[in-house]
Image 1 (tube, rainbow, N blue to C red):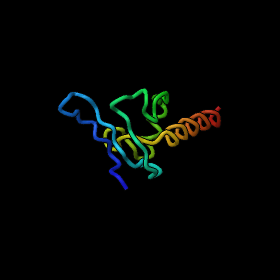
Image 2: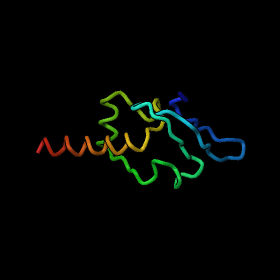
Image 3: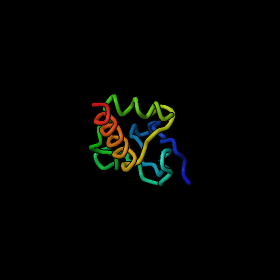
Amino acid sequence: MVDSKKDTVKEHKGTLKVSAISCPRCFSDFICNAADIKHCQCYGVSLQPADFAYLRQKGFTAEETGCLCRNCLLEIQREVAEAKLSFK
């Protein structure tokens, strides 16, 4: 298993790294491509304030946790959307 926290420290060349990490939510391994975000697995998934609130409620913060895999990001969006519908 790889480290669940993404190394976002800039390299000497001033670029972000490509890192093999484990999702802290589901523990699946994936590649974080912070060096070229358009080619990262999370590209195009935009979390809204309600999504971040849901993550905090579940004990995850971006500062402490690092990256989540694309499947978990999409699942979080789905769970938040379903919760909003059930409150209507």
